[in-house]
Length: 220
Image (tube, rainbow, N blue to C red):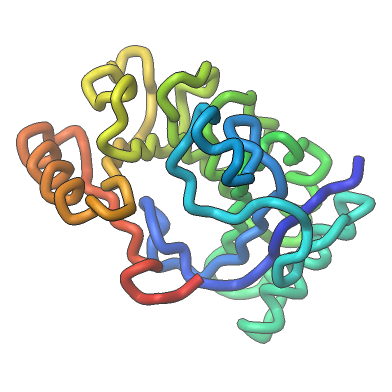
């Protein structure tokens, strides 16, 4: 299959347990919970997405015919900044597959191609599609009204508040994650949402406050 990528770029991971790590981001085009077009937002399952994942016209984006082609482009993106291959160095190079919804396209051959070049493969997914074998780090961000099938992984990142996806719904006997993060909903009420999320985490210590540090720092 051909892989449609909105953008491929190097930055620091801005959120979650890997925050602060040097990383290549592979943002796949397309999502199954929203078309990405404003005309469809009000009828979408996910109505608060703030990411442009439409098309393949972003920095480093394009259509890649084979897994090896996209893996090689990711490796070049890493090397152009760090001066070394993903397989070199004391720590494996981090590659974050995101979107949109990356699991519409990310498959086992592509995961294997990334890993063969030395990448640690992480995904940020809405959890509605099964994860292929070989992914090293699974972050699920459930959206209210969606059918989440991925109920175990490394971190559960819940945007807060979401009516219909309250933190208490995520019983750890059914949602088996290593870490539970509450991320304040961005937008005009972000200050109020941050205060509410902070208070919830203070009272419910299973949850950790997750902040989008890349937005605070003004980096991609």
